[in-house]
Length: 325
Length: 246
Ligand SMILES: Cc1cc2nc3c(=O)[nH]c(=O)nc-3n(C[C@H](O)[C@H](O)[C@H](O)COP(=O)(O)OP(=O)(O)OC[C@H]3O[C@@H](n4cnc5c(N)ncnc54)[C@H](O)[C@@H]3O)c2cc1C
Ligand SMILES: Cc1cc2nc3c(=O)[nH]c(=O)nc-3n(C[C@H](O)[C@H](O)[C@H](O)COP(=O)(O)OP(=O)(O)OC[C@H]3O[C@@H](n4cnc5c(N)ncnc54)[C@H](O)[C@@H]3O)c2cc1C
Image (cartoon, rainbow over all chains, first blue to last red; front, side, top):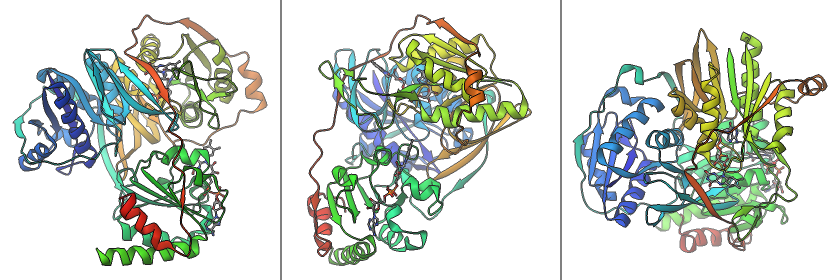
């Protein structure tokens, strides 16, 4: 028995979302009294991989085959499943991030394992079965999924739990799954990365704004506040639709779903379709001139006021706070 | 080119979410059901566009009971050529995927375009499961899809940007926003939809791998704490000391 987590590397570095998955895997392993193992596909240094020990991973199975440097769902499914079978894993944990969202359901079919997509808490075991909580109805409710099979696959929602780092280094072992060239179905032609900005899907802090800003020329303070906090910027669909902001910033039911620690919404009314993408945020701050704006019902902190006045003040106060600490 | 589009039925986005029977069942009272927006706006429309350009056929498949007829007819009105309904209550993703895969095995589709997720269970899983059951390549979170000489050129979302990949057909694609512009069915489409073939087939026996045991609505949301616009420093203090997020 073992718990296997799939850890993604990008440019040789472990992804933050995968650290959470490995930590989650270690917690499950601890509960079951078994070992936490990780599998890594693609180029990475042994020193980098050994750091998984700090989140409880005992052993890392590393397939350094360079063909894994590009994601291919078919090839990755085969390799991770082989690692799971080889390690006798009863639970496989992945991040519910871009690649995990596709990889996990494929692995679950291959292992004939029950799967919970987007777990927000640790599983509760009850004999051979387990229940895991996940968000449903775009964050408006949660459901308990009971996993009925011996093998289980869990994809963890990013930002659901904060890894506590300890001491320790994981042992890194070579893993050589049997891969044919035909297993790799996709040929990567190029990537288009938004540089210099924090990817919204990974951000812990997000500053977001909507139609209350009155025009694209007024986004300066929003960007300044985000930069000061090390936050990503987001927006409502209404402003992306009129090209005040790029579409990749739009959050909500038809845009990105995010779960940052802090979501600051400026001049956004809080339509139900917008809330669907952000109501998993830990803390929500709303700044709006309208005391009746629906967003205040979902907010933890609110300021009823004009964005043009409040945001610059907020920048000043955060600067003061930074200087004091 | 033969394209299959799996479509799901979901509660309308503005539905009141409530549960009954001791929080074990979704309460459908007063809820309007619609075609899953991602399936309707992006997956289906892109399939129709590809057919319009290159010829072929678009088939929609839905796993659900007879009360789904309306959304299936809508898909036909938008421009699908025929429809298949697998007659079963869809209560497990693996079960749903197995039905779609069983149908696809008999039909030799060049392309299957599913939605990335439904707006009720938000699982992002059916497309990937279908691909694995058919041993096909699959790319998800797809924003752009062109087909030329049996090769798909795809733009997909990755962390912090997009990536372009090429994949040989047949394959499965999971669609998301930007893939197409939604189409509204016109009168001709609506009339035509009535006579397009809709085949109802029984479900394959497949076990359910999961069971939802209960649902929960969030505890009454925290009362919003208001801070005066003249005292913004207080907000910074609360975020630092109370919420501990900055
Ligand atoms: C099927 C469907 C899917 C959708 N998907 C999404 C989605 O994914 N994401 C999304 O965001 N929307 C989505 N929408 C649109 C959504 O319903 C709203 O129309 C949209 O979110 C409104 O954007 P907004 O809050 O920026 O604008 P508005 O609703 O116009 O709100 C502007 C707010 O700014 C406030 N304001 C005005 N002046 C100031 C000022 N000086 N200072 C501070 N506040 C001020 C106003 O009081 C108001 O509350 C969807 C709609 C549909 C029908
Ligand atoms: C009473 C009830 C009980 C349920 N119990 C469970 C349970 O125990 N376990 C469980 O996993 N789920 C359960 N569900 C949820 C339901 O079966 C989900 O539809 C399923 O889990 C798939 O997840 P999803 O809808 O999020 O689809 P996603 O994987 O998010 O959907 C992706 C794409 O797959 C396609 N698709 C999805 N559903 C269908 C369909 N029915 N027909 C054709 N294509 C489709 C669409 O293209 C869609 O865009 C229950 C639902 C109900 C109403």
